[in-house]
Image 1 (cartoon, helix red, strand yellow):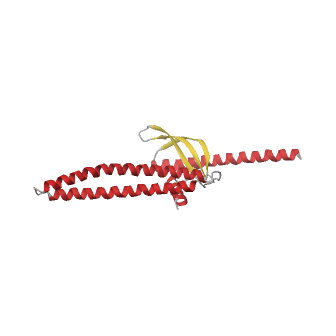
Image 2 (tube, one colour):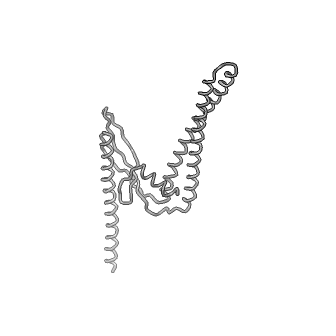
Image 3 (cartoon, one colour):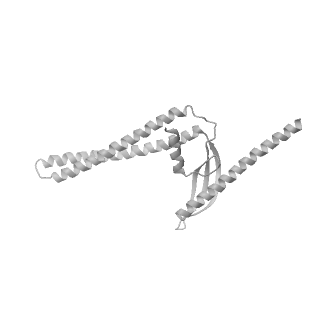
Length: 203
């Protein structure tokens, strides 16, 4: 009986190891194919592809990834809003000055141009402000959902990959990039993966 139990344990361990090796081989093959496809489209020479690490992604981890993406989007919107805000302030000052001058001289065309510029900047500022706070609302929704998220299920994989890019001018650049993959080891298009995360968690 003990011998049978030992044989069963050895069989299970061997099977698990084999499945992991098969997964790693499939992931490596799929990433090589995907990177090769990218290199053909960009007409670049990509070589020395090495997968340094493969991690599983749970529901909770996907929410963390999406939160980081939303935070980066919020920061960009906020920075753009700040830049437009500076331009808007300058435009407001220019408009006030031209209106004052126009009271004693005929500079109505200048006033009209300044007012048009101010209105366009104001519209853009308000648009960016609304978009930034819309992203902030989504982050709050995600935060609430993440408190109940599963931390142990399997949703996808992420692989850390290093490779070398040779450009047309013969310059060489080492690249390190994360690739997201399905549970079956198929490589996701990053934009599609992010779009799917938003659709799933920001309902």
